[in-house]
Every structure is written in structure tokens, then in C-alpha cells.
Amino acid sequence: MAETRPTATAKPASSVQAKKSSNIISILAPVLCLVAGYIIWRFVLGNPSNFGEGKENGGFWPERHDPKTALSKMYLGGIIVPVLIGTFLTMLTFVVERFLTVSKATGTGSNADFVRKVQYHLANKNVDAALAECDKQKGSVGNVMKAGLHRYKEMISNNELNTEQKVLAIQKEVEEATALELPMLEKNLVFLSTIATVATLIGLLGTVIGMIRAFGNLGADSGGASSANELSIGISEALYNTALGIGTSAFAIIFYNMFTTKIDNITYGIDESGFTLTQSFASLYK
Image: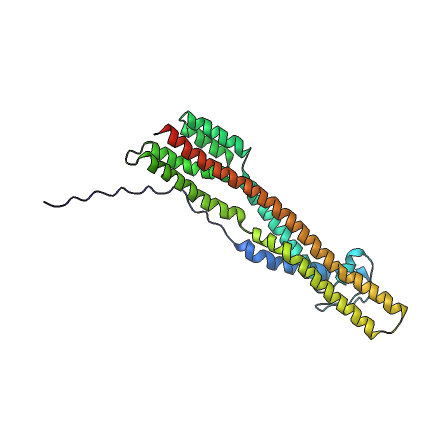
């Protein structure tokens, strides 16, 4: 008598679809911002009309003297200044990009209120109403909840699995949806954290280079009071690098902490969503 093998039950396909995202901004933004930083430094801050002397044109780093405005003094800070301006523009670019992404992921309304509404509908065994709430929420918590609810709805009519297996299937669906949502939230935050650390160091590098130039000029000139005046001017120009570096770093730290706090709140809402689905199914469909 031929042995009869049990037919394997097909694993239901996941309703979670991988999100396609372009990383082009991560590649182009720093390069374009550095180029923009040089253009601002060379042609805006270093415009000959901003200086009383040294109106030479052309060259990568033309010499300028006697600045007329405080901004034009930044030009005399040296070649590190355009790097710092580019770093600041890069920070602003990723702040705007993260703000748009995190705002979209937050969705509409309070995540706590959204979860309570879903719990209410599930307690009344109205899964379609819970799905409608996910469409209204339009955020990462709603996306994860919606993926879990689709599997939740499938498991209600599934007669092949026991309750524990159904709960595990719902939990796995939520985990897969979460694995797709969280990387999008944390993407490009590394630029802000890196700038927060590096900007100050770049500023100090510019200051050291400026101080070397200032003391070098002092050693080459034995003009007494005029040499001391030139030294004080050189030191003030060098300190512009420190100010730009510290300012950029401070803004990067503030926005990085702000975004990580918002992402932590979204992550908490996602975890609460998964717990809500599994507990509701386990209690209502034993």
C-alpha cells in the first residue's frame, strides 16, 4: 500500500510590500552644498565691492583687504570657511528632508487616540472599521496596523491553524511591516549626527590655520604697533571659523535630538499597535 504524505499548507503571502526609495539626495546633497558654499564664499562674501582694497579679480582664492561689512570679514577667515558654509547648507538640507519624512510618518492626529479607536472597533469585531481608521491616520503607525489587520482578517476565517499559530502569523506580519517602516524614519540621520561632531573640528582646523597665518605675518613684519594690529585682525578672522563650526554643530545636535524623539514616539506607537492586534485576537478568537 502506497504511503500517503500529508499535503503541506501553503504559507500565506505577506501583504507588506517593500518601499522603493532613492538615495540620490544622500549622494548629491553634500557635494552640491560644498560647491554652493564655495560660490557663496568666493563670489558673495568675497565680492570686490565689499572691500576697500585688494579688488583683484579671478583666481581660486583672490586676496582681499579692508572689509566693509561683518559678512565680508568671513571671507578673510580662509579656505576652510567655504567648507563650513557647505557643511551648514548640508545640515539644512537634511533637516528639511527629515522634517518632511518624519511629519509624513507621524500621520494625522494622536497615535494614542488612533490605537484606542482601533481597539474599540476590534472589541466589536468590526475589522473593516479599524482598517478605515488606518486609512485616516496615514502614518507609519497606521501602515503597520493596516498590514497587521489584513492578516488579522485572514486569520479569522482560517480553519487550518490553531489560535496560537494565528497570533504568531499576525505578529510576524506586524514585524515585517515594522522592518520596512523604521529604516525610512532613521535614514539620513547619520548625516546630522556626523555634522554635529565634525563641524566643530573643521571650525577649529580653520582657526588653527588662521592663527598660523597671523603669527607668520607677525614674524615677517617688524612694524611694532602695526604688527600688533595685523595680529589682532588675523585672530578675529580666524575665530570666524570657530563660530561657524560651533553654530553648525549646535543646530545639528538640536535637530537630531528633535527627530530622534519624534521617531521614538512613532516606534512606541508601532509597538503598541502590534500588542493590540495580538492581544485582541487571542482574547476574541480562542
